[in-house]
Length: 432
Image 1: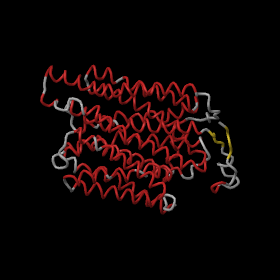
Image 2: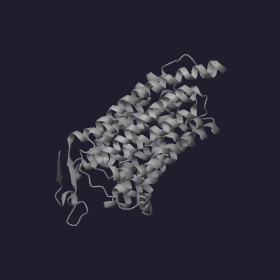
Image 3: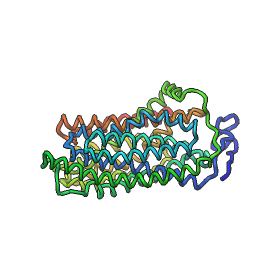
Image 4: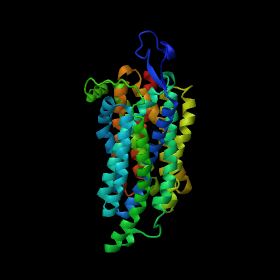
């Protein structure tokens, strides 16, 4: 491993640029470690799409109650993003990554008492702790991938890392559907009561527990490996000032609107992904079991995997604002068509929204962060906090579905989210 410097003037950075003489670390093995982190936290996050319908069936929950799974998980981004940035400043990247992985392990292990008690609240607690660990790891991974190579190719590395994130979100739901939704498929909680219902909940919860115990073992091993390399990087962290000073960036309209769009994007993406099993299972759509519907969730996340490779090429020749506006408009069209269609077509139209999601996070991130200079790291922390949209929008969708009696009519909520995102793309195109 060696430290290097980028010559002044590369990529338009002339004399006096704050990016001149930017140091980076030449460590290809650590880059692969970060790619693995993206794969892990992306995959574990997408398991919520499988766990949610299972818990809804076990505890006979309404759509609004079931979407509390997302609230418990993504609330961690609001509470832990800025503190996690403070831990990085004090302890460095590798030590903080170890802390995040151990926290994720604790969250996985909390599924054991949750299953033993067979109570919904205990599962929400376990998901919250798991989300806290993932928040810490993600706050580490985003800036670390920029440090591990020349600044001129940072965007390329970030796109490649996000492809690993999409790979995780494609693989994990398929495995989770088999392990979690496949067990006791011939039994329904709605047909049981009293001791029989309690026994069924305990037995069915074990299928969830076994999945997360396996994840806990893997995470603990990885945390141990990372800890052995805790002194690998010779870091110089900025420790002056309060981490909450970053919130002053919200006075900049371009940045503030970008943070809002991250909030809405994550909220819309999670809403569709987490409710996809219930949507496809409807008699008017595919009329299939939750297990069969769960097998198609990877196609939603797989669209993001494909789209990120295609989008990285498109963004080389088309401005980010235009691409974002087109993607947002396409998402609106697909959702509207799905809501007004039926059968096979309705299901695949909604699954195809995953393809339009692919470029949104990195594009919104880059537009919002443009011109932040030395405050780019602070901006990243604030943007990560906005991921709490995944905790807010899904329950609102569930409530709307309960009130209207239709999962299709409730899709007006993600349509509004994508409408704002498309408008931000047009704003950025004109402003840029």
